[in-house]
Image (cartoon, rainbow, N blue to C red; front, side, top):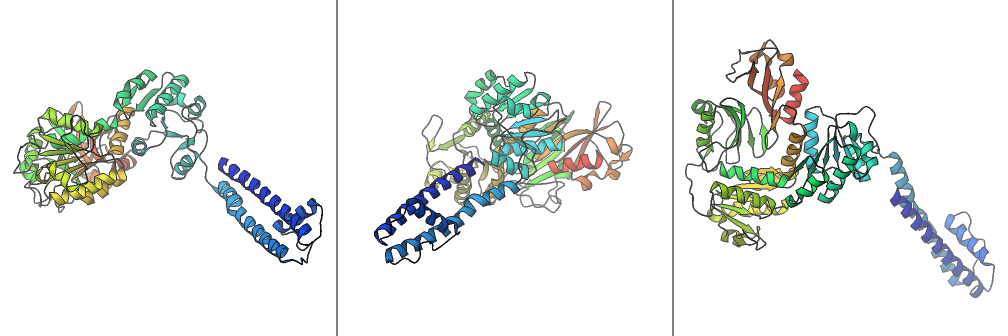
Amino acid sequence: MDTWLRRTLLYIVALGGIILGYAFAYDYGMAVFENNPQPFLRSLRVVVETFTTTGYGSDAPWSTTEMRLLVIVMDITGVVLIFLALPVLLFPLFEEAMATKAPNTVENGLSDHVVICQFSPRGETLVTELDTWDVDYVIVEPDRDLANDLYEDGYYVIHADPQSVDGLERAHLSSARALVADASDQVNTSIILTAREVDESVQTISVVKEPDRAKYHDLAGADAVLSPRGLLGESLASKVTTGVSTTLGDSIEIGEDFDIAELPIHRGSDLVGTTLADSGIREQTGVNVIGAWFRGQFVSPPDPDAELDGSTVLLVSGTESQLEQLKQMTLSSVRGFRRGETVIIGAGEVGQTITSALTNAGVPHTVLDQADEPGVDVVGDATDPEELRHAGVGTARTVILALSADTDTEFATLVIRDLNPDVEIIARAEESENVQKMYRAGADYVLALSTVSGRMLASTILEDEDVISMDQQVEVIRVAANGLGNTTIGEADVRSRTGCTVVAIERNGAVITDLSPDVTIEPTDKLVIAGTDDGVTRFKSVFG
């Protein structure tokens, strides 16, 4: 509306100036060319009548060519100004009246919700997580247009300033379970300070982009300060450090000596080119394949005829010894350990975290970056083939792309795949919608910053819930048996009905992992299930 008012004011000023200009010209022409002097107000009236089409020919006919031309131009100008007023003034008014507007305050009775201050790509992941756990939220968005767009897309959003006491009060912060500040570093500290003014007891979580500024968020009163880029770097590095090691690496412990783990299949592994049914994974190791990522798409349960390749990541459950056996199968049968076998491209915060992790793990590596800074081994352009060769990409085993621009990552992936068809490419994506493009370009494993950071926020907020989240798309949760009591695993048919897998049953302090179809679920049991966000939602809907 402010834009419309400014536009209207400019139009009125311009219209008045044009009318006065024509009035002076008409008055002068009547006196000089027509030899018919008249009061200026009469000349002004003739121009207004012409522009508004309420009257023509008050002084007609005109005997001189000059006056006839002036009247013709004046007629055309009036018509143009009338038609210009439609899109400039009237259409925006109709659009404003018909548009869906985000509310300015939350509905009464909302409590135990999460207040998300400003919307970002990681906020989308956070909202998905909160919806999965039936936790209410409200987005406080200061940008009116964005707030309206989010409201039309189905998000619960209000248009308010999160840096103002009034804005947070309208979000019912005092009855909320947590506040998430997800704007710039400076704005986030202002939001935290405002939140403390509204309610000292509410949990506040701030997202920091520059780790060295985290202490100022602490000083502002944040209960938790999260640095998503650091976590992303650690996650990317883990794909290398666990790949060159015979140990299992990170896993989720379900019970004593029973874990759930992600295991990427490396290029050169004997599993590459086989189907899941022919791989012998179940027969040789005894693990249960819960799901698998095929070029970034998670499938649960996976098709037995699905072909395994260097981009496949298995989600499996089993004892530590079983998982370690499978780990050996996923590794390349021919692996060198020469210097420079891993190339890190990008030396920003994510790249530095990766470098530190590989150094601590004793993994030889080379760092390429455009800036000549400490820790950079090769200065060059990530998209230049010659400079990539100089960094050792042509003979590398693994390349980790830690660039901040997704377009650069996509292009660099194409170049690297052309230089070394057998290299393993691990990539960072800034935006989750670009993940599939990176897989198409040739990446083997891609992690999106927005996904990792959104799940980090959800894990912090839902700390009281019995939930564990993997890096991408999959959740492992503990839930009460509810409607499944006194039914067998086979009768429940959880996998086909929801896409989730029952991994274990917790009963009287013990964890049952040997789940045959005839195992009966007791009403007091807790089930450990694994599945996608949508699958978990379906499970709660069907069996909740």
